[in-house]
Every structure is written in C-alpha cells, then in structure tokens.
Length: 388
Ligand SMILES: Cc1cc2nc3c(=O)[nH]c(=O)nc-3n(C[C@H](O)[C@H](O)[C@H](O)COP(=O)(O)OP(=O)(O)OC[C@H]3O[C@@H](n4cnc5c(N)ncnc54)[C@H](O)[C@@H]3O)c2cc1C
Image (cartoon, rainbow, N blue to C red):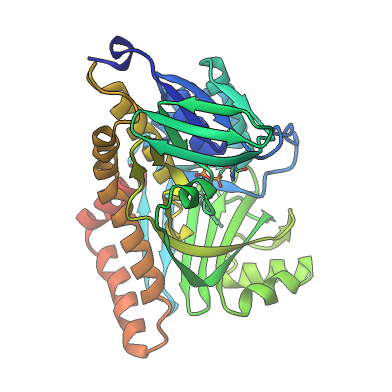
C-alpha cells in the first residue's frame, strides 16, 4: 500500500541545495524545506555558471520524472557523446562512445539545474523557506524537532539532513563522519576554444593531478583540474593568457587555442565516509551522507539516487509504518550502502594509483588503460556504467 493510503507524513528537509530540493519534489508526503542561505538569485542570461555537473542517464530520468529536466533550457545543456581518457605516458588511451540515440552524460549548469528543481518542488506544493536560522535539531522515533533562533519549534515525523558536506545536522545527531583530505585541490574554470568540443569529454591522469575537459554548448568548455600540492596555487596565480596556454598544452592542444571565459574557482577535495546515515526520526542525503573525489563526476548523481531511493522507500511503506520509523530508514540505508561504498572505493583507489610516483605503478596504470581499450566488452560495460 502506498504512502497516501497510509496517511501523509510531515517531513522537514534541512538544506535547499539540489539534492534536498529534489527529494522534496519526489516525496509524496507533506514537505517543508529549511534553507540557511538567501533566496536563489536570478541567473545571468549570458554567462555560464562556474559550477557545472556531469549528469548521468539515471539522473536525467529522475529529474524528468519530478518535472525539473524540462525546465532547464536545452540550449544550455551539452550532451556528452564520447569520452577519452589518457594515461601519463603519452601513449595510453581509452575511448568510448555512446550507443546511438542516448548520450553518455549531460553537462548542465549548477544554478539553472537547482532553479529548475526548486520550481518543480514549488509546483508540487513544497514549502521552501530561505534565510532560516536554527538553534538545534532532535530526533527520535515518531518525532523530529527543529528549534529556530526566534524560539519557534517545528515538529515533523521525519527530519532529512541535506545540508551538504559540512552538515551541521549530521553533527547535531551525533552521526560519525570520517574525512580524508586529498592532496589535490580542484581548480575550475571555463574557456572558449578555437575548435568546439562537439560533445567530447576528455580526462588526463597526470603525475601532477587529474585534468578533465567537459564540453559546454558551442565553443565553450569547462575544466576541473584536481591539482596536486602547490600546482593549484601556481595555476590560480597565472594571468588569463598564461593559464589558457597551460591548460591548452596539458591537453595536447586538442581544441586548439583557448581563452579564459570565467573566474577561476578552487575547491578542496575530501573523501567523507558516514557509516550510519540514519537514526530513529532522521536520515541524511547528498553530500551530508557521503563525499567522493570528483574525478568520476558522480557526487550529485549519488545524491539524486539518495533522494529518489528515499522517496521510493517512504512511498512503499505499509499503513502501519510512519516516515521516521527506524526500520524503514534502515531499509533505505542498506539499499544505498553498496552504491555509495563502490563509488568511494573506485574513486579513492584511482586517485591513489595515479598519485604514486614509482615507475612500476606508472606501468601498471597505463597498461590498465591499454588493456581496457583492447576489450570491447569492458568498454561497453564502462559506457553503460557512465550512463546509469
Ligand atoms: C570541483 C567539483 C566538481 C564536481 N563535479 C561534479 C559532477 O560533474 N557531477 C556530479 O555528480 N557531482 C560533482 N561534484 C559534486 C557535487 O558538487 C556535490 O555532490 C553536490 O553539490 C552536493 O549537493 P547537496 O545538495 O548534497 O549539497 P550542497 O550543494 O552543498 O547543498 C547544501 C545546501 O544546504 C544549505 N545549508 C548548509 N548548512 C545548512 C544548515 N545548517 N541549515 C540549513 N541549510 C543549510 C546550503 O546553503 C546549501 O543550499 C563536484 C564537486 C566538486 C568539488
């Protein structure tokens, strides 16, 4: 029996980022979102948001299902039809293309995507409050509470912590988080290219870090350079022309000359493992529940899977269950564990393997790329994985 037959529960979502809002839009219960930040500003009609995401096929279907995908302007989304991955010996390469009719991924801007999800959530009757200041949260089976700074107490059947990597909800609920700081900082910037990227995403595993070129519409592309140690400082200190030359040369001038088309942003990178994401009356989703290295571009995709999975588990509850029941939340926790642990394992091991300086490690990683390149079935598997 569905949630509606069981009676609608009341749910408070702490954090109105992409994942919290997507859960709110997907959930059949009565949802209120409390966001600490200000109301979302209008988007610049011309400039590209510095945050862009590679969205998987599963994410596209989910965002379509909640009515958000169609609200994103198609002219601002770049389908990825081919991926090329390069080793650090100048020769090893792995390339795979999308099967006909469906791209491997889509590159979309963070601000337009989140705005579209917010509009979809509002259209489904979700109440969203911004500039929210709260003093404390508490949860136990059957009742969750948020005490606001103005003295008001809000009550619900379930509290969903969607307040990002530094989650205060996670800390207040005493859910342990084990963080490992990677030796890289992500340097992010957009460029105009002499030759349009034409839907090809490229990634270089280099001795000094991992460089990704993501296609944007037209002649633009976005880079994420997970740069080791002092390199991030060095790149950020370059003048625009010198940075453009450095990025062009690091990618073998695959798109000809480049010119910088944005500010240069930096993001520290962490692996965050959260062994338990649920307590009676509360559960975590998105970056509050896991942090992964961006080399596979999967963080927000994992978060959307949390959102979709939690909404499904709640909708499938029996008439005897309430949304904050621990058994129900544990069911969701178990369902998400394998996916999150696998993604954390793969990205962490790749970061480690390509960070080792020893020549034997260089041989192994480049041989690995060449071996997969020679196995059509393995490439089909990787392409299918990228599209999930
Ligand atoms: C360089 C880089 C590149 C990336 N590229 C990709 C990619 O290509 N594909 C991909 O899938 N992922 C990518 N990621 C990961 C992605 O950015 C995150 O996984 C995603 O933004 C997490 O979304 P979220 O909604 O969980 O958290 P957030 O986006 O952090 O949202 C949290 C929200 O909670 C609010 N908040 C914070 N504290 C409180 C509080 N105390 N009370 C109430 N509200 C609060 C915040 O204001 C914010 O609105 C990348 C990450 C990095 C660093």
